Image 1 (cartoon, rainbow, N blue to C red):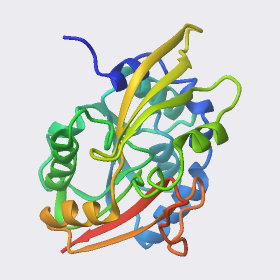
Image 2 (cartoon, rainbow, N blue to C red; image 1 turned 180 degrees about the vertical axis):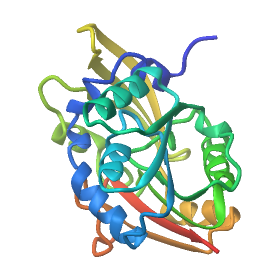
Image 3 (cartoon, one colour; image 1 turned 60 degrees about the vertical axis):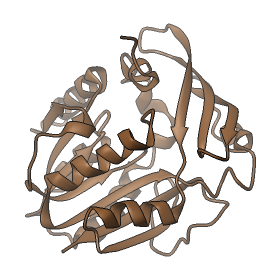
Length: 255
């Protein structure tokens, strides 16, 4: 069976991933997380699609207990290396986010920077991630995630956004077709892996309407779903979600 595009992208893309523009806002993002957690360091946190561990590592440095999961062995290996460099002990585990083994084990889940959701090939597979995370959370729990905002490509071409984040030495993206019926963008991703080998892969990402996120999370028992605009490194409740914002920030509470 051939690998999915996101498996191809992350199979040897740990160090280079940390150079991406969208990974540079860790400190400010963790500041927001702390405020949402009420600075309660007794809470057990699950970092879904943790990648190279940037949020898990920073939160651990601040005194929180975090378990990071990801599908990519290369990303997890890089996360473990970075934790070792900081003399931190963090549990990084390889799991498919659609089939997590946890049952009512965590107080909080974070899934940031498209940590698995919404990269799956079908809407059902994306929903499986939400269901799996919900199962891993206790009855009274907090779920904070970011995802792609469908309002954005419905009002302006994705090319403008991709051109704005283009930088030397990191991945570049070229939208081939945004399907307004499925809210999926088919794009060509070009990147150089950690061994210096250049790749081109066809990617497929699902954008979501805020009403969809409210409904999907509501079916999983999240009684309060708040949605904001997501700015890299500066998450804030003061930023409304508009058609000019590429990502949405979702804060969902259950119980």
